[in-house]
Length: 277
Ligand SMILES: C[S@@+](CC[C@H](N)C(=O)[O-])C[C@H]1O[C@@H](n2cnc3c(N)ncnc32)[C@H](O)[C@@H]1O
Image (tube, rainbow, N blue to C red):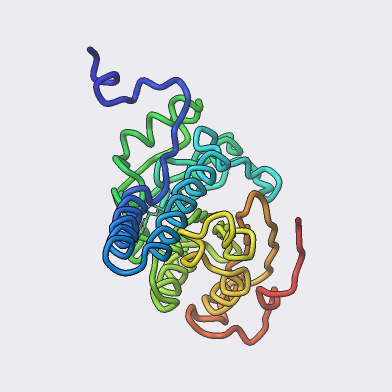
């Protein structure tokens, strides 16, 4: 048996991982134990209701993963108009679903994906598995995967033309930490460079379809407020497949130090610009 077969990497289709599956299994186990204990020792109908809700969370998790098509990279051509020679950073790249989506829009440019490879976020995530996906998708020469923390990005100031981030801010527990991540992204972008934030949003639909996870998603308003406070301008936003897309710019002359409210400048504030649905 070859190394690829042993490690399960011999798939012909890319696979971008099941998100937070480790955490989801822990929550499901605790929830089931709670339901059984309550049904056995306290009040049977309440225990049964808890178990039914657990089963609903379990089914909707797998439905969500099925609908998010984890064997396809993102099609970003509708929101990113690239020249093809950009130098791009994808933070929290995981197995490359966003990284490879951007690489497909490049001709000579390059995308660097960084991640801390949190195994509870994506089981068995590694640079090798991300490279394997890039190979299958035919963009191996345009990507590079490295270990790196978005809270302390291992690149100098003003380096990238574009930074992307898919589903990373929801990993953090407070706006303070989210702002730290956004200020790092702002720092490594060149003036005039762009940032594409992609987050699954909390709204009625995701509360019903994904009750086990939606409490942790950000709202659209929260995303816009965080981007403004980090000093980004010129917002274009859109909504697709339960994901919010927020494309913003780092001002050419940075009057808006990250972490402060913008006072209005060359590009205006992040809020209230073009909407694409
Ligand atoms: C929900 S996954 C999304 C992965 C990928 N962007 C995608 O869309 O498939 C979130 C990713 O963020 C990574 N992550 C969490 N905290 C991070 C940090 N501080 N720095 C870099 N990556 C981080 C996790 O390891 C995980 O791979």
